[in-house]
Image (tube, rainbow, N blue to C red):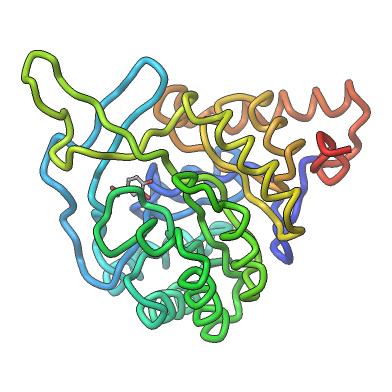
Length: 299
Ligand code: DHB
């Protein structure tokens, strides 16, 4: 009943682990696949090992988290060992970040070689100079990156978009026109927290990305707007922690969803709880499949 597809990629379960949590080692990814996630998106991986920003990189708010880890990762060469462990257990979506179409293409080629089921292009990290949303808010740049990656790999290419823009639908159309297989919406919202006692920003990077319940309604609105503008498959993400949140994203137009912060607040059983309760809701309300629920809020 919960089977869905993101373009050509079939998922037994509609919920995936969002990039950035429980997804930097092979064993943690295998663990998440075993507890009800239909796929795991890796932490964003770049060309070289990157230690990330100095602490503090993370702060908890009443309504979510703000983080600026600084894209820490072991680099694409070393990450092969983790992919080798994880990719034989299920769908691993390789998240990558780069500064140019060529760099994205090379990283995507490596992820394909490592057995990734799809690649997710991080065009939306809200605070990395030369990366993420600095590239991902210009439709021409987004189009050139997606089309370069499409011509280098045969696995599906997903583009993760930023909500920190007023031209979200143009970005989604650029992804579709460049041949992209799906958009993932949304990444974190650029944010900041200040310590009154210190009189300074809490994070070493000053700015970070806000995630969790605070951004859910922004994400649902973003998915709804993208669905109204184009027919590209959408993966919804942002503040999902229970079946009602997941159902909102699906009804706005998402064919699958991702959960990030709620793994931190609720633990790894969040996927099995969403699966059980979403299925119960679907039975009670006469939705025979996920596909019957996708985009119903537009009708
Ligand atoms: C980081 C990357 C992101 O894409 C994001 O949304 C938030 C933080 C990071 O590694 O700093």
